Amino acid sequence: MRQKILIVDDEYGIVDMMKSYFEAQYEVLTAASGREALEKAARNPELILLDINMPGMDGLEVCRRIREHVSCPILFLTARVESADKISGFQAGADDYIVKPFDLEELGARVAAHLRREKRREKSMTVRFFGELAIDYPARTAVIGGEPVALSKREFDIVELLSLNEGQVFGRERIYETVWGIDGEGSSDTVMEHIRKIRAKLGAHTLHNYIETVWGCGYKWNG
Image 1: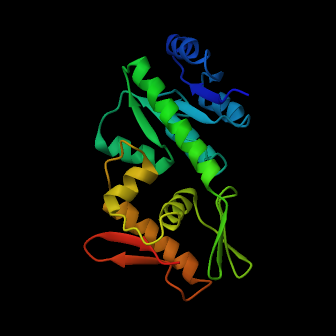
Image 2: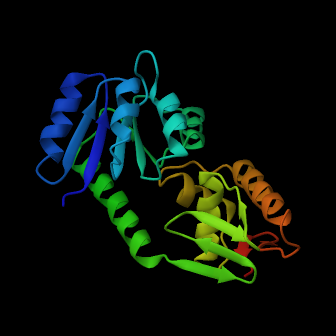
């Protein structure tokens, strides 16, 4: 079965161009508005190409509304290039930014890279136990002593990154680039805030410190 991608843009010419390019390799769904994108997202695409600048419900709002329910990569298509816009997009749940006008071959390579990454993640992850903490990677859940830990998508992404590489030290910039997207312009404050929230949520169930600070370097997982 071919992988499914969703293309969302209110410019029909751009949608037709991308659809023609991708449909030889993927099953392609299209949407011309934010509301239609919400409907099509329910069909569980493996990747979403999402325009930001749409009338009515824009791409940022679409991303925020579906992100807690959709874990697939979301790549923003936009003419915006300011750092603040990129950070807003990553905070909304985007995984990558594609700036218009773009080269179709480069776009295709990025789409393929994100899909390969998702395939590797699916194949490599099972359930792992760290003392009283159980992490179910396919289900994206964490449980301590039978009690679920309510982690947001980004919080779980950070836990996933660190716990799958136990003992390895990750700097704040590397965490940001890995979790928020390959083009992310790292924000140490964002990473630090997410780490603080993760520690508080885990700390409500256990005294064990699963995320250690390596001063001057970053963070590592202490299972």
